[in-house]
Image (tube, rainbow, N blue to C red; front, top):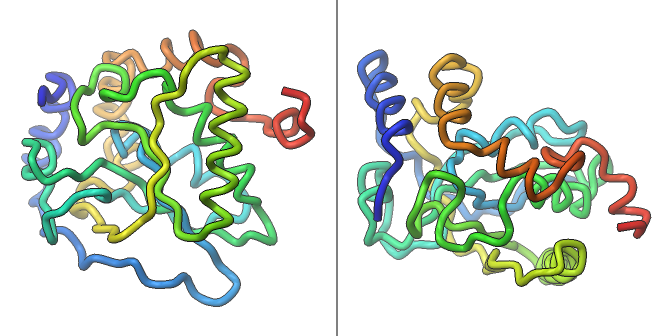
Length: 219
């Protein structure tokens, strides 16, 4: 697996400024009463936090790792390959304020669904796109949305839909990276070509600003 040079540089700078902590404890626990959660993989987890954090009804977004076979993986282990994990974000939300379908809309418009071998400049299994569902309802809605995206784009979608077994929070210095390290974050994001590719795939819908046509079935 090859890790992008621009992101490696940003990581090194972040580590020089703050000491890394160990990954948090694994969690597959049920959300508290009245809340739901879902885990999305869309390449670099730094870039997947903000699109969900800005949504009304989302209470938290946590970067982490899922889909692998090694317990309590570190960032270094995941990025080196061999653990099976993908970089992910865990979205905790109130389904009475924001629907799972809206979250799916935002997810799709923030990934390149046609690339299953990584995302943008980041290559390898740890950057693969995937939706990790908790419930049968989430699985069904995710599968329906994938079919819809294939129809919209007129091509096969390479995003996997998998049951969530365990979610491991990432090290503290990865959380809210786009807020805490703005210059490094935007440098990495631009050099990685993320926004340019999203616009190429999604046009005006890139980033997922307005889910109404999607929810109304107009797409």
